[in-house]
Length: 493
Image (tube, rainbow, N blue to C red; front, side, top):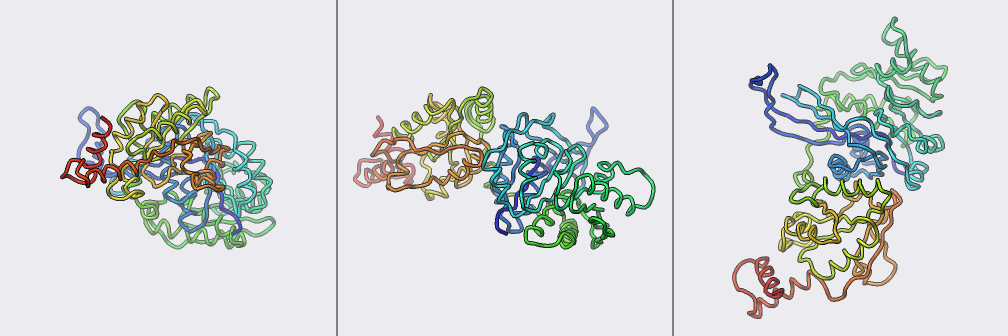
């Protein structure tokens, strides 16, 4: 592969709620589900991207993300899976599919997110990404991304093989795709195939009609447990049988499309790609489906980008501020850090950052993140207190706590116009590129450095407090962390 595999389409937030049913509701004859566990996963195009990344490919996802908690959760989950997110703005709410399950079987599915939102325009970085891709998978879930005109023009122009996984509510595939992968009901509905005849004959008629209409190189109609039927121009259809497999089929179509795309990216023939995809999808179902393929994320990831404790703190607060400023045509500014022992240097950076735009969102490392970066003695001040102190500053409009070592997942969701670093970052001299620059470029954002007050350092303050204790000026006893807090407070009086 010479470039990344690009997945383009609509992403949803999937949530599986597992529980037990032991009684009926007293005011209505319906079962009561007592929740025992809950797992969030990317759905739609996001699931296909995660499947591709799990196979070791470099994967970029072009999708629309809303300014809400669901969008923030998706950003964290995709980052944890190693997927590069190229987010388009999305008007409205993040679509969610919530499955209520008992002993592995779905009792009820609850969809929310309202009407389909309108995705925003792609950045130049997105268009360059599509031009440089080794293969592209369009995972259409009928919510608008596959119909975006600039994206369709870029898809028609790319030299990479394009796989189109269609949806009956979505647009036609762009002319010239290498492979379209509808399932049997989708193919019948899209081709308007009349009833009658055998199953294989109907699937073949549907595939040939779609191949001609879309000017596609080939159409593979997936047949569930019976494999797939592949139609080329002027050739006898190829039937690829599937090994016997029973289990949860949720996500099998995404697994099929992702496997076919990866095979084409490696240079496989279309027939070879379909055979490989059938085998992958069958093994996926037999192996336990999505629950086994994508186990629950580590505990450290689960609360990422989510916190509570104030009107200006958390994903809801950050999303509301960003959405309001964007709607007014304003500039969103963000900065980040640990902000352990808030000092004048921090304040100078925050004030300078706020002057660059119409709002300032601070991405704050959580306690777990600070400990991972700084060691077991840090942070000195808990994330609850650090976030409250920051939110109390007049130059800060919202505070967003993240668990990862870097703010990359938070940035992919926030998509600020400007990312600010304090001038101490560049104090070593030379031409240094900020590590966040590549991410900001995905949506046309910029990174800048602002002046920093010399001689202000949290690490130096902690070291001075420890030295004071060693010299007998700090309160003896207690942990090193307690000593730092006491000594610092004493010096502030």
